[in-house]
Length: 178
Picture 1: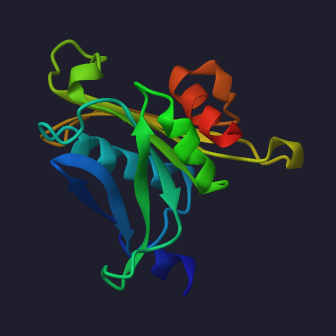
Picture 2 (picture 1 turned 120 degrees about the horizontal axis):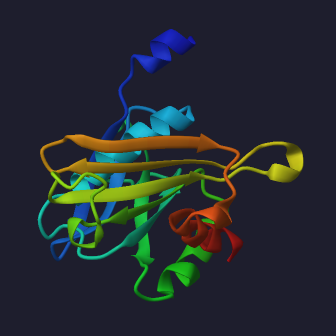
């Protein structure tokens, strides 16, 4: 499949929950290829996090390239909750991930201070794409804020990220280091 045909296949996200709490999202169609596509996937995830009661506190998700047996054939993997930032259990649970292709942190509206005062019910998040700096492969990241109606308030991407320079990437880097 050439690059043009590949990019015509959309990337889908389907949230799943348990006891009314977001536990993860199935990724379907294809994997995001670029920093921008991962950031667009983050925006969709942040929009899901805006839904009332679905995400109660800041939560870390590890991206897994395995797919559950009982899902659609076009499922390529999932973002799985590894825990909330209010405890340290997410670091222990993150050890089982190995080196994931991406880590995502989502903040619900109750824990997000919107960058624009006229916006309300804004959720936010960060995606960290781990690199191998020793081999010249930089860490990449994206940050997003969105409202429940789908309005993207902010979207920012960066290559050559120092994970310790931002609170969200620092937390996600702790999972990688565990």
